Image (cartoon, rainbow, N blue to C red; front, side):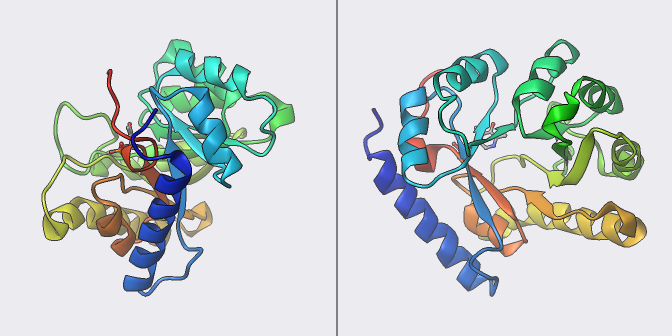
Length: 234
Ligand SMILES: *Cc1c(COP(=O)(O)O)cnc(C)c1O
């Protein structure tokens, strides 16, 4: 069990988001919380759901599928896959999630589109961008972003919603805002050059840099620790 009950942590996180939006001069509904539940039991997801949370993010496929099986009664839940995605996992992701945030290759996107069951409607996707330029991080490079976006936008069973990033950890608002500002500019430039894309999502901001992300226009902030407490494994 987390030290703080999920209901209280969620209330604090909502207040934090509301304060950050107000400070940034944005509307109360301009960003929403994605609760990152990786490594946390289904019971905590259920608690958050009971307190009004609907969007949940998972990183590890098998763990996510196990929890989804326990939570089939939560019919308004929205599942986001936010972890690294290999080819052999695309079918299960296409069949069991509403969103994928971590697309960084055309091959993965093509498989997801081919494997998406028609009855579920298009899969919402974000392109993960490597803004910090670290060789070890996944994500498409800014230079290759536009070509990937155009290819993904053509796939019939995907709906390209926007961009996502996981910047290198940084201390302080100024350092934190730099890579997040870059993602915002990349989205703006892409939207300018390709107006047909209709991008409405900037998936950025985690427990440590929510304020910086909201200042830079985040629309979906991915909070794990702040809602469910510290993680043990992984
Ligand atoms: C784990 C994770 C998060 C949540 O991180 P916290 O620091 O616990 O809020 C957000 N996004 C991704 C992609 C993650 O893997």
